Image (cartoon, rainbow, N blue to C red; front, side, top):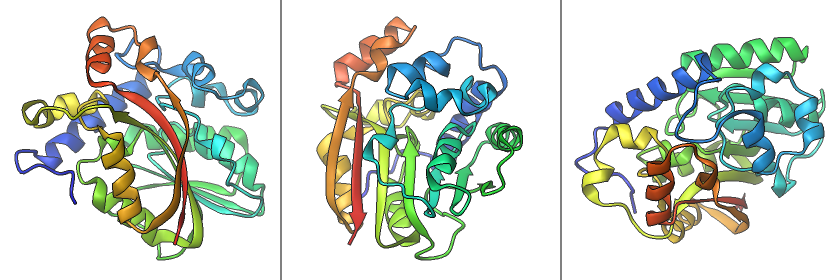
Length: 261
């Protein structure tokens, strides 16, 4: 089953997403239709002590939608891959959890975010974290090379979610774990809205109904797929129309985990 529609221009979606998150990276103090920054981190569950342990410049452009580390699947020495690593918040936290004997690889498509993350890694003075350019549907890593894949508010921006989850499955070792925070819906979006690339970049219309989303993960070969948290991410949006649209579709965050079978 594929979540891609024939009317959707996937390159146009990617361009819109890159443009949106380039602006988040370069203008972190601007008010966006979705919550950003340190207050957003705290509101969705990041412990203050974890945020205090990483550079503030990583946190300012943060645009994640949940706290994937709630899954508690990262162990010292693990190789962790972050799909859509943004300004580096989650790779830096993952790097603390793996310790220097582990490895953390962030993957992103937005040049400004890649630069920002690399700067923040340098500020943190760690050498077991690196950022590479790549897409969720074509991850530039070897088969069975990761112990954990993490992602935060990214797969909802990917038109071909089926392919993205298959790629995540491919790069994980047997028994490898996922920890994902993402936006899902209580009811489907209209095909007209779903064909609008700009609306995809705004985090709602690219999302799938929750059961469709979970079925895509299971169909890719994951077992023990479990939702461990839900939250109303958009209730803190500064944009009234975004809050209204999210409420109308039942858009909300889930945090989940699962394992490669």
